Image (cartoon, rainbow, N blue to C red; front, side, top):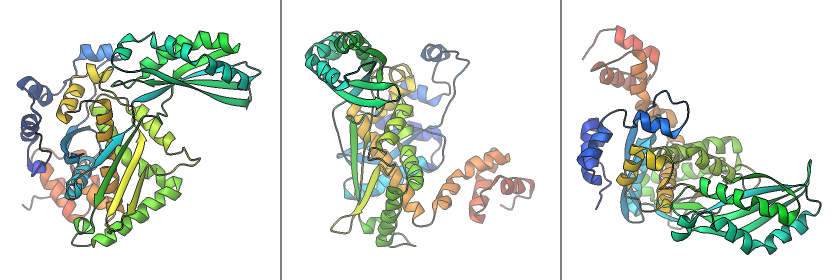
Length: 427
């Protein structure tokens, strides 16, 4: 059984950390070696993934620790360039263990394919005509993917949305509701939409234009909940009650103000996107769905909620679309994506989505806690100091020395780093 606690992990060298994770996750020698060397994505593989390939681009890959999700310890690989993200998520996951960690759930893996129909003078009549042929259209769609049907998936239903008055006249849009199982589902639903397009034209007498999935995956939701007691959140400078009040006030700011909500939700995605990238999934699709879902009520608002329970505990929740897969695309072709999934020990796309939103909730809590107490820059800049030291020209043993000096002086800047490097070493 995996233990996600990573004590003293920050003090280890990258090689020591990798050895620990390899042992904890049961990686074999070849998998250990693959993670240990740069350029794990072969150029020939990259050339087959996209067009016009000239090389590969690497991001730091880290592991967030301490996550306990539905009673199971989970090590979470994250690929990201920004400092403080992994540390904040891990720390809030560590505090969450006091109350049992994160509780998650999700809906089935349902995706929508949209078939746009124009040139109809009787859009409501056309809608009913499509629905009359519902079973026929579902059978047509399912005939194109016997493998998916064999796995228990397939087209489940058809919805028809009417837009009676657009600048181009009436428009109707048929939605194929498809259970894509452990796939992200884009190719599957796109193929199904194209398969039924001609028949929909015959049924309606209209002209089909677009036949493509929707990234507003509002039928494919993942949810997470976490609880923190005041005693858990207490620090030397702030009482736990003050921290809880500050977090709730910060959340309410995002709930009512779209300018704040944009940054608030970006912080949530700071946690989610690195998990999506590390597993080879489409982070742009997840981002698009997240922000569209945050606007579903007619205005842009927070993806999370933070409230105070009857006993005074802080309770956080998140619910959002999570269209991710374990099969197909880069998830299968990128060797490190496959290793990331093995490290997490996930068995389904739904489980992966639940882990991702738990990390997003932890990241959000870390940001709100910092913002409502000492401010975001104090902790963030301390963790950012290594990047600043490198930018100032530090190398080798000088890096740690410059970092220590900048943090002590609370002056984490390239200019100050260069000044330190040009001066004497006092220790």
